[in-house]
Amino acid sequence: MKIDLRSDTVSRPTPGMLEAMFSAPVGDDVFGEDPTVAALEAKTAALFGMEAGLFCPSGTMTNQIAARVHARPGEEVILHKLSHVYYYEAGGLMSNSGLSVCLLEGDRGMIIAKDVADHINPDDLHRPRTAMVEVENTMNKGGGAVYSNQELAAIGEVCRNNGLKYHLDGARIFNALAVTGQSTRECGALFDSISICLSKGLGAPVGSVLLGDHEFIRRARRVRKVFGGGMRQAGYLAAAGIYALDHHVERLKEDHRRARQLGEALQQLQWVSEVLPVDTNIVIFKVKEPLTALMVTGKLAEEGVLAIGFDRQSVRLVTHLDFTENMLDQTIDIIRQLRF
Image (cartoon, rainbow, N blue to C red):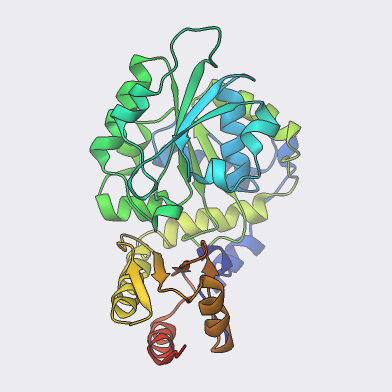
């Protein structure tokens, strides 16, 4: 049996989720006639105190739609250089929307309000107009790092004071909220738009919801069509999202605990040089030279544990709905016995 820790996207629907999917009432969502899609959009928007939502196939699409709506070609987005929107979305900001980027540094992939303020371009015809700020919470490349509520609010204040749109890539926002204790409505009040992923820690098979006010979502729906994201009887997928929101949020703390235990076990190994702080369900560790991430992931795969390399020396493990207590014990035993 393989133990798959490559991502929290690898989980499969639970029996209860499948039952909800099979029994969902559906219609043609492009015509606005799928009641389950409408219910998911309304439910997610209400959770975060936003006016409306838009169900899309992926978090990449919701992020890219937000950028297309918030900014015009030639304008600039401020974000961390390791943000998923920039690093893992195939140059979409540039190719989809013709946007420039201002890439900031920051501890574990997180930016701060002062740096945002310092990098807003002046009204100069030689410079792109700064239009939007994007943050990712939790921060994937930072090892599941979590922004403080205070820093997110401070960045939001900079945005408001300078007429900038503020977008949250909340692919794992419920993991973040499980740590900070902030309510979904408190979170929603900070941003102009939020992308909520259902297919990571929440365990749905497909889909993300983009949130914003009515006018933003009206424009976003048109962009979704342009991007080819209109789906027909999508209620079968939306039903999985509704089930996930109802049943899989509280259990995220189990994933966090198991991730911490993996991190603690890795810290004891001679061939591991560093383990990034484990805040949520992502564990990133660095291996000592001459070892490489490829060598380590290959050895783990031989023992039945799947992981991915994040760079030449770093390996990522992600706990999730399908990673059980028994699998945790097995994984710890395996990594302790690895010899190089």
